[in-house]
Image (cartoon, rainbow, N blue to C red):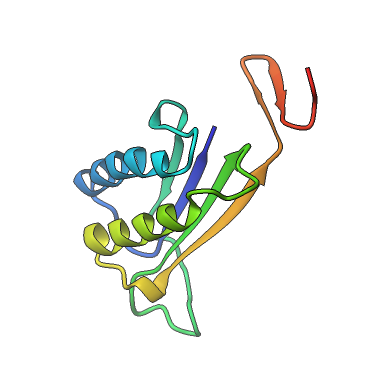
Length: 120
């Protein structure tokens, strides 16, 4: 299950959040085996973010935790699409968009542990 946390220094309207949610749902498909059906999103706007000692332009910081994709296949296309959508929808310059990737080796869901290191 992919989980993407999004922090922006600018406000996000309901319309913008819906547009981002829809585009993120499509974009996650660029990572093989991932889809919107299991995508979890968190939006936090109006965060106090500083970049290069400045906070006078909008900034976005994302953390994308993705299970079972240690080879990072599709991440280049996914990164390009995320950057494009935040530039188009929130008018955030590309050099103010940062994405941290985290490889998830285990998830707990529905009372079960899903661990890629365990061989069933």
